[in-house]
Image 1 (cartoon, rainbow, N blue to C red):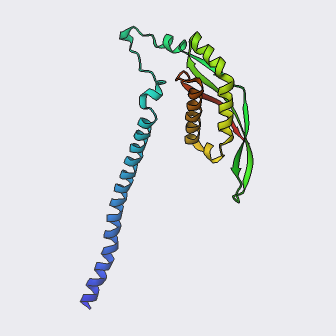
Image 2 (image 1 turned 60 degrees about the vertical axis):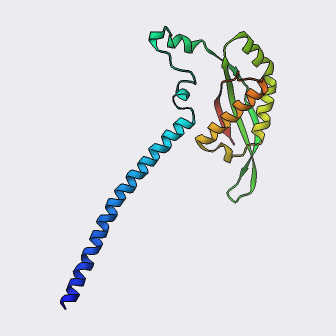
Image 3 (image 1 turned 30 degrees about the horizontal axis):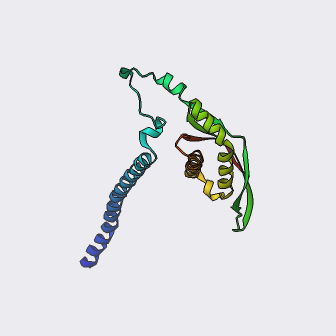
Length: 181
């Protein structure tokens, strides 16, 4: 009977010991997960331009070099505004069937302010709009989901605008309205 009593005590102590080990590992797993999230955030930050993305792609000017931060930012860029663009896109219903949806977008292109750039952008505006319309018609509702969808959309529109203009004059796409119906 003493062997059974000893086996019973070992069995009673074993689950408590296991739970303690699992609890300790749980903390380790949670710490590793938190570290992984921080690493992914840092990797994404670097992949999407890092600090230059936060400063608009321009190096920060220091006060000691005679730069005026407010004066440089105020007069450096101009906007080429586009009227609303409405196109039909493809979506899927809950049962997987294809459904027609509409995309309405209002956007503007940012470019450096100069008479030459303004003339080139005004001349190419109808061609840029046509390129945007053709690209947007190929979109699906799934392409536009989430913030990554918006980032990809802006990157693709900027790439097409630069291709039409023939250089890197357009520096950014600003989207003021985006509605999918």
